[in-house]
Length: 171
Image (tube, rainbow, N blue to C red; front, side, top):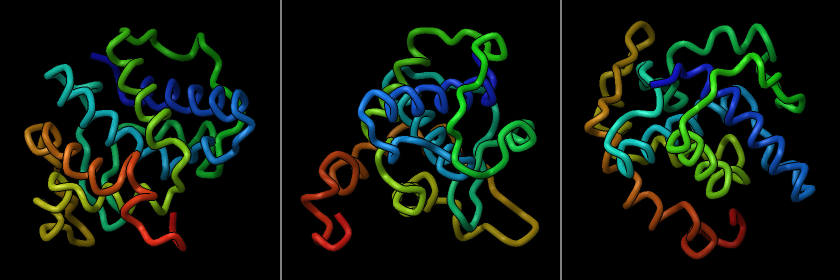
């Protein structure tokens, strides 16, 4: 199992590559968007492979799910949009399964904005099951069991079919 920071740097690099390939800056990520993308990647890995992408906890905050262990990323790249790739030698090599989960997130959800991903993450059953416990001083852990099956309903209501279920003003 990898560390969340390795998954985060890999995801950021995949986002940069996709944005360049498509000439579409919407794929670029920032620290907050990255947190939500990692949450969805963790859900994808649990659902499709039966084990987590990384070992750190994901906790519920007022702004949605947040991944523990990413403080060093803020020191390296700040909280603004990440446009410069992380050097490959800084990142532990990920298994094909882990890269697949991260690629799925970039391909499926990468073009959505930070606020759209926050909204989507907060709609998941995994987040909603613990959201009422959030306080200013306590952030509950979102269980891996909860994350395992929370994508199906969300993707039908939001993900790739988002433009079909949202009003045109927001699509």
